[in-house]
Image (cartoon, rainbow, N blue to C red):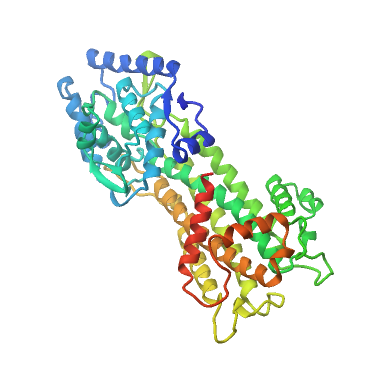
Length: 496
C-alpha cells in the first residue's frame, strides 16, 4: 500500500503502483488541507466573490460571470467541451499513471476539490478502473486539457474505461460496482483538467523504461566487446576518474564487472592498440545518456508532487491566485532531452552492429555472420533495420518544446507542446529497444562463433537467458520474431 501525501511520491513508488499493482491510500493530514480548501471555495460561492474558474468562464471567457445556480452546469460543460482528444489511445499503464498523478496533485490542498472526488480516484486505482484517453490534442499549457477531460469524463459516468484491452462505457462499470457517477461542483471540473499529468504520466513511463534500457545496453555492449575482442584498457578506472563525470565512472565500473573473467576480450597491443569509438567510448557515451536520465528523473519527481492547476487557493481562501503552474515547459524540456539521450544509445548500438557484421571490421567473424556467405545473407538486413530505426529516431528527436502556437483567442499565446515531446520520446524508446535487440542477437551469434565457454561469467549468464528465447543465426530465417522476442524480454525485465 502506497500512502499518497501530495508531496512525497517518488519514482520507486510509481513503479510499484504501475507495474506491481500496489494499492494507494490517502494521508489523513493531507485530507485536512483538502477539506479546508473546499470550504474556502464554498465560502467564495456564498459570498458571490468573482474568482476565475469558480464563478467565471474559462480562458478567453474569464471575464464572463456565472450565476451561482449555474456553477454545476459550468463544470459539466467544461469537461464535455474539452474532451476532444483524437488518435490512438494512451496505453492503459499511462492512464493509470495519469490517475495517480492527478490524485496526488489534488491532495496538496490548493485546488478546492471535495474529498469524495479524491476517494473515487482511490477506488479507481485500487479496482483498476482506468480511463480510455486519446493521445493527441494537448498543447501542454493550460494543462493537458483534452487528455485530462477524458479522464474526468469517467468520474461523471461518461466516456470509457479499459477492460481486457477493450473499451467499456464508464456508466456500465459504475453500475456494476454499485456506485453513482460524480456530480461536479464549483471549481472541480477546472481542478481536474488543469495540470500536466498527461505529459508527466507518459514521462514517468518513459523514464522507467529508458533507465532499464540503459542498463540493458551495457550488458549487450559487453557481449559485443567480447565478440570483437574489445580492449578492456579503455575501461580502466583512472581514465574515467580523470574526467570526473560520476555517470561515466559508474558505466565503466559496471562494464569492468560484466567483463571480469572473459577470455575473449584483449588488452592494448595484444591484437591492436585501440578500438573504434563505438567500443572504446562506451562509458563516455552511455554515461552522458545517464546524465540525461538523472536530470529527467529529478524534474519528473518535482512535477509528480506539484500543484499544477489554476487558480490555487491559499490562506483559507483569503488568497486565490491565478497563475500558470499548468504550463508544461519544465517537462517539455525534460522529454526533449530524454529523446536525445535515448536516441544516442541507439546510435552507438547501431555502429556496434555494423562492426560485428562488416567483414572489414569484425576481426575474422564470417561476413554478416552468415553460415554460408553468399548463399545465405545472415545478419546483413538486420543492420539495415537498425539503421532505419536510428534514422527515424533522429526525426523524432527534433525538440517539440521549441514550437508554440497561440490558442483561446490569443489569451494562451505560448504553449509547451510537452505532451507531444513525451509521446515522441516513447516512440524513440521503443525504437531503441529494437535496435538493442538486434545488437543482442548479433552479439550472441558472434559469441557462439567465438566460443561461449570463453565468455565472462556475467555475460555468459545473459547469453544463456537469450538462448532460452532465440537461437543464434545458424541459418537464414525470418528474423522479425527474434527481434520481437528479445525486445519483449528487455521490456519485461524492466518490471522485475
